[in-house]
Image (tube, rainbow, N blue to C red; front, side):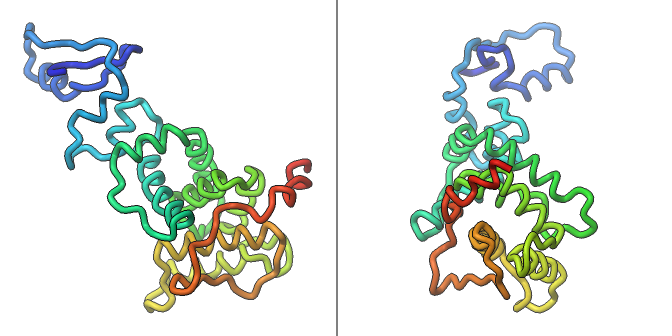
Length: 239
């Protein structure tokens, strides 16, 4: 189309800036093409240059929290590729992110809610809201029950011990230390943090006591986001 486009529900698909310009120009009449019943799948072919990112494309599709979902999705896609293929996912396109969010929109909504809740009423959360949201999403799509995931994230943020020598306490301590670290050896990059959180979730699922949680990217594959056994959660779900 070359004008204004509207989706079947009458929300605008494309041409918002042209409409805004007309309003500012105080133009009474102008000839402009209007395309009704615009197919949502066709939006991918419009303005797909550097100016439009995944968040923009998702917002145009009417996705709530489009920006954060686009950011989480792109990072999660890369981590899932690391888990499944052993390598980073290169050249992730806007269309790939858009499709991923549409497939996992409900999971992302839930993860965002858990991430936001995890930072409230905590004097110094060891994870940012985005980090908490992302690991919550990864664990949920991996198959961990919701109750376990929410409890694991809360324990991490608060440095709580659900049992003796729980991984959550160790991870909370080193993540907090990394936030204030001045020495490079005490800092953690994003991939290290997510790897440790996934490994910690796996260990905590079987209530393993630990003195530390470690991951060596040179010798080990990226930790899985799947639980040890779904059977181990039956009692927790019943409770």
